[in-house]
Image (cartoon, rainbow, N blue to C red; front, side):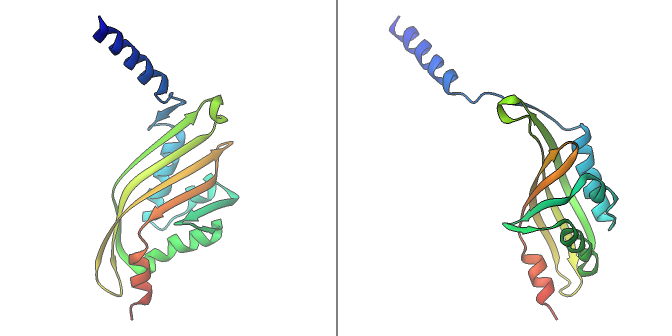
Length: 159
């Protein structure tokens, strides 16, 4: 009987401290599809979806450095002069629509591996990346990227 009571107390305590699900996560929604289009167009050095889905004064945080929309577009586009064979080896995109406990926020998240060959060094680069996109009224207002910038720094410094 003591073991049963102890089990009930432990289970009750565990469930009371468990994190509550506060939203719905999907992968085939319009936001996730827009992020996939954005990434696929980047590979072609196109920015139609990029321009369409971001507000004009969106905030872009790349490894802790805040940039504006125009600067980021120029940076992504410059990859096509710095690298050849740009590819996203794999990516996973999901979007969570949070409930009223979290102000009904909408965030998309992407994980993937970017690869390319450096035009100056001839080195084949492969870098994992993660990004999060905050949506308000169907547009991205904030984008946060985490990636290893070593390839960009090395290629820019190479002679």
